[in-house]
Length: 401
View 1 (cartoon, helix red, strand yellow):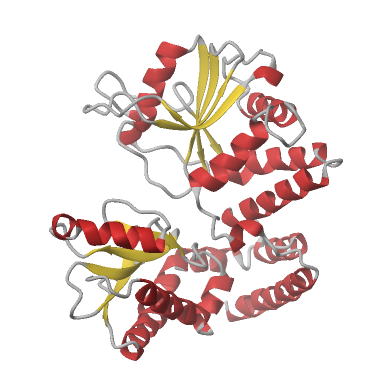
View 2 (view 1 turned 90 degrees about the vertical axis):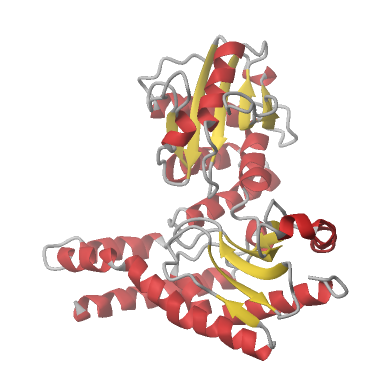
């Protein structure tokens, strides 16, 4: 196994050289990463996908991208009895489409991530887009109820990074439980959206601004779906592992993947955040031991802070969707510090919810590749965390936390 690891490491070093060459040429520059918008479902992914699908948008390609999407959908789901025979030039495309307030029984209402309606609004393609967010209770069930009463023909798509199925909580209601392949269909970013974007890039060849925007988004999708390895390196790695001498070692290494990352977080990361707390004369709270679980976190506070602390949290499973900001300490603080919550939200901006007065994506929001952990080992992430804490403290001067 040591010999195998040595050979793999040689390929890793070759990959780093290739990536440095790409970086020198500016090919690694990505506007979505600059804006820390990699995992934003609504304002990045749904917005971009919907804008490309919208024939009335200002990309100048009319219904070209929508036609590619519909054709690709028919190819991917050949046995689906769904007709979207309509004038694509006159289709209506919406993001966060409001179908009413969510009822007390959660049987109706909500906001559909992306919806494509025919000219007469009697046919629809409904897309529920999930990057890292959890399914809501009866979410797809509500959308199906809406579609059944508003469209003669429709298809309900569940879009995720890897094509996994939704939870039973999302698809089960009081009247029935939904079935994959009948009531909804799963599509993914890893292949479906990737291939659609490749075709879109080809059609946008004569529109350089549109083409390069699609390219940037395409590169982001490759990274989010762990497909950004250089093709030559990937082929060499596959050849190395795909033989009888190395296959057992490959499965052994794969089986301890998250155990390795978990140990690094429990040693290196925890040690670094404690060093930050000591240097800033703060208290660090970190009870997490299994970092693969959703909402794994660590918090910084001071003895005089009674209602809020500065938090860093993986809002997704498996070290994904890492955010930082200011949140309530306890349920009681939601009642006792409402004014302070509003002021924190105003000063810091970003997003907020019932617990967080403000939160924003960390510079490295998804800890799933070697680059992030190299940043952890060389103190880059430690420096970023410290700067985030200092910046928040400075911005919130004068507020009784």
